[in-house]
Length: 151
Image (cartoon, rainbow, N blue to C red):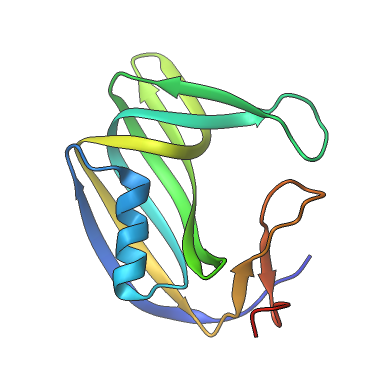
């Protein structure tokens, strides 16, 4: 386990509108406001989206299981923002629901907002954290402290 201690900096309340791409809008805000470390929650609805709902087998690097939807689903989400290769990277897990169908997974790719999504972003201060690619694991986990080749 690794960890870092910091404090809450700026707080953003965000409305993402009908037809917008959810993840793209979060990235644009992070770039506009120079957000390098943050956690966020969100709620609303998506018209369509793709989720990674687990690995096909218990091995690394994982081969993802994809589960998409192309009709409106309500969503609740929690995520974070850290830099990867100098750019904001969104890691967002959402629970989606429509009728009796419920899914949970990591939202990836394009995702079109239906009506509205509201996000509440808490910037983290005093934390030196970046996403650094780990080829053995097959993803870019958060790394703390001195980051090779970046400092």
